[in-house]
Amino acid sequence: MQPVFTLFSIIMLIGAAHGLFLALALVNTREAAVAGRLFIALLTLAFAIDLGHEFLTQSRYLLQVPSLAYVDPIINLAYGPSFYLYTCALIEGDTFRYRHHLWLHYLPLGVAAALCATLPALSADDVAALFYAEAGMVTGERVNSIVLWIAQAAVVSIGAYLFASLRRLLRHARWVRQQFSSIEHVTLNWLRNLLLALSVLYGILLVDGFIAGPLGFDEDMNRLLYLAVVIVIYAMGYLGMRQPAIFTTRTPVATRPDDAVGEMPTQVGSGAPQPEPEPESKYRSSALDTQLSQALSLDLTRHMEQNRPYLESQLTLPQLADQLAISPNYLSQVINEQLQMNFFDFVNGYRVKDAQLMLTGDSADERSILDIAYAAGFNSKSAFYTAFKKRTGVTPSEFRKAARAKEEIAE
Image (cartoon, one colour):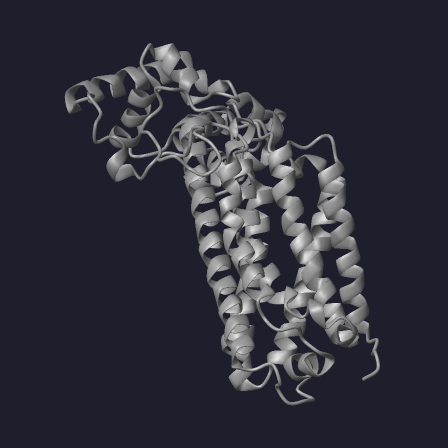
């Protein structure tokens, strides 16, 4: 069987080469924290190996190196641990610490490799039977069952790690809103987009494995899956060149104070502060009773209205708690229970009220929307528009236009 070059196989080869180059660049860069860059490099390397194997399969070069036939199901077990540990590293930021037990996440990969090592060596005829259905199966049912088991284990592994990664990211996002009044520089948009892309790949994988076969379009779905992997790799490389910081673990998220609300269970990687627990359980052991909580709520409201601390664009929960001479966990509990909102929405509610007054004041026409946003305590126009529309249902421009119309009618 002669090698065959098609546009698809060439795309696979180029994608594999780009992925390998990106993985090496991530390992060798001096700017990224070691743990974070290692995990994203392993993820990229797994992509590159997978694409390289697909190139060998599509070009039929795999017949000349039958020993590589088992690589495809084995390498799939590297995906889940790699992006999960990368998620942990980015979320924990500078507090992330490398531990040798992290490699236990790759234990299934090692077991699968060991199992495949016990299988009989494949011949060109065996590879033709496994991948091209052009010869009889001569390696026996043991090969089929073990390879199938590894492939199924990889699907389960990717799904479980993807769920765990998304869960950690969502809990982190909730914690950020409990600690910061401006979140543009503390959110992990890069990680969110990466996990969404991986979720799309996983969805295609499931369709390819469980739906496409019986319906007869498995080859098309397989090609779509690998083309999507190439797109993800090139997107990672492009974003890495434009924003090198996305591959580091040094996020600007402040370390959670020791007396912050709730203690999180220890996560993989370190004992670093973690996102807060679910609302129904986080105040269970609090010594703050209802009467004191209501009194603190009144003090908080009075402080916000008289001293207007929300005008500080980088105001955080610990800073506001220090101004009130109470602990951050008490302040968080008051805002969550008495006012039924998180810290982010609470502070930005006052900023929106201030902006509304400025948009309808005597000098409203002389000030730009951005000017008013900064004056109210916001640090970007996009954050201002998002918070304003969430609270009022209209944009600042629409609000000012409606206010002018009312004034004209009144006159």
